[in-house]
Image 1 (cartoon, one colour):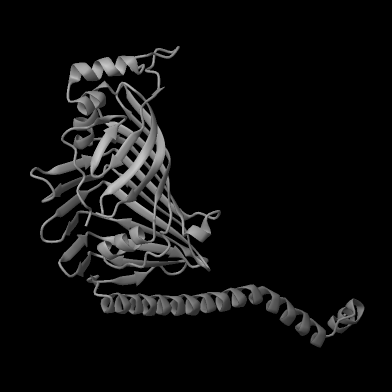
Image 2 (tube, one colour):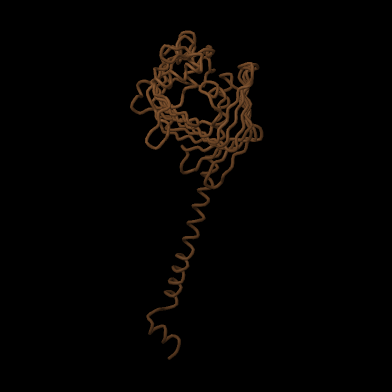
Amino acid sequence: MDKAGLNEGAGLDETETFEVTRGSRFWLYAPVTLLALVAIAWSAAWFVIKGRTVERLDAWVAAEAKGGRQWACPNRTVAGFPFRVEVVCETLSLKQGNVSASLGRVESVAQVYQPRLVITEIEGPLTLTDGVVTVKGTWDLMQTSVHAAPDGLQRASLVAEAPNFTVTGLAPTEIGTSSAHFEAHLRPNPSRAAEGAYDVAISSRQAKIPALDNLIGGGEPTDLQLDVTATKAQGFRGRPAVEELERWRAADGKVDVLMLSLTKGNRKLEGKGALWLDELHRPAGQFEIAAAGLEGLLGNATGNKAAGALIGALLGQGQRSANGQPKLVPMPPLRIDNGKLAMGPFVVPGVRLMPLY
């Protein structure tokens, strides 16, 4: 049988064979073509997002400058193609009046598909000064994360490994503090929105706080957990700190301490209460506490270590639980009033709280 006979037997002519081949090639190249179009569209979208990011950053810096805050970010870069937007400042500094602050490299990252979550890594050192008081800080690692919502902030967090801070100019001697690990978390309180309330959770491990050593005795590192709710906090808008604090005080702002837990060697303290600022801008408040091993604090309160030990014994200090650990027992209320710190009827000598501004 000849070739024509074969074609007739198969039921296909040459035109039909060409059409089948062309159709097969279309389905072969269609996915590749579609992928190329998607890649081009995605690239164009990323560069649009990059351009808008730069515009918003420039607009924010300009708005801050009008408010008297001069931000400087030398050698700023915006990168991260194809799935992220990364903004990097090799150094970051701020100047407002007599106050100036500087940091090392700062890198902020947001995923293109999750732009409301921004993670920032901050390198030290930190230097903050107003010409009189200077704060310096270093750390091994510091990261922040900010979750935004269409109506504002949803949650913000800060985590630092091995932070170390020193303060000079505030007291005759340098004030220093450090810890192995530090965390802070902030969110609007959904059930107290009418009060402009924010929840803050802070924890610190193996912290060294000399002022606390002097207050309750012992040089052991401290583990600290603190949960508070601050009312009238929603009005903060980046004004100078003095203006912000006065606005908060005048609005009857208060810090509700929901949980305070402190462990320092065999000394333990748990409490709750409230803090605010009095008319002279000094901290004021009252706490209900339970404690173990705080004879040193009682000795400071009475001005006599022997008397402190005696009062501590009368209050149950030194008791042990079934597992042999110091037992928490209720203590007299701790009051901060008129710049003084008092436990029950005893005023802690040598402690004077000065106005914050």
